[in-house]
Image (cartoon, rainbow, N blue to C red):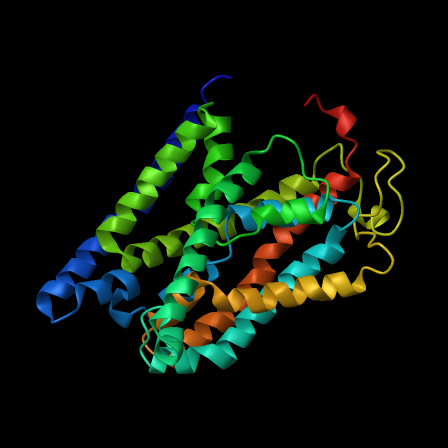
Length: 337
């Protein structure tokens, strides 16, 4: 594969911009520590509880919007047994989760100045329960990272919604997207691409803590928004794809694909309800979400950040759903893959 020089330039610029933003944020946090009696631990974990509304809205959105979000929604839409119905279920669940979090958890968590989401359990039930939940949280994190990377690296498409859900996990934006980008542009191995992206993310995180993470989230969310919507007109103009409106409810006879709205199995309603509740309630126990709440300037700031993220999930879900809908209508035999 020939080296894509323009792609290399853009990718290097992106990485340097993200790394530079993280380093700048680290100097900002160190300056605050030097000029005031700020606890370094509080600064590293919670940004001195000084995350503004604008930054808070972006970093709260980034807890769910990433490479896994886009790939999962596109693939779930493409899978015949799920389709747009499953995509709507996912988006509705996470939108509802943010709304519930904004109404229920922001005020008590922020006003009581907890440091992590496990502090309430520590206060109420003691060290034993808190240690148990900490171990569980660590185990899930250790499982989540390789599962996400492996599922995104798979060369074969998943064929069920359950398989595709492996991608749908909160993560730093650089990790889920790095493999595909570097493979296409640089033709480097999966392992090398992970090491490069991990080095960048770890560097700015260790230098500036949550401040660096929050400010780089702003850059990444803006770029993902522009990039995903920029793809939409080009996807819709693919010659091999037919009009998606013609295959909403009817079989695509040219490609032999079923309707892209999805075809849920009869009697699966209770399973879908269970999945919806699992996603809604499970989001409340995610440390990155609670960390954004605890790091906000006030409980009102945290609440508004949650509501903004709920709306942002819907907006960000449209491009990948369109990609999946167009893909299922395409006569893929016209392309040499």
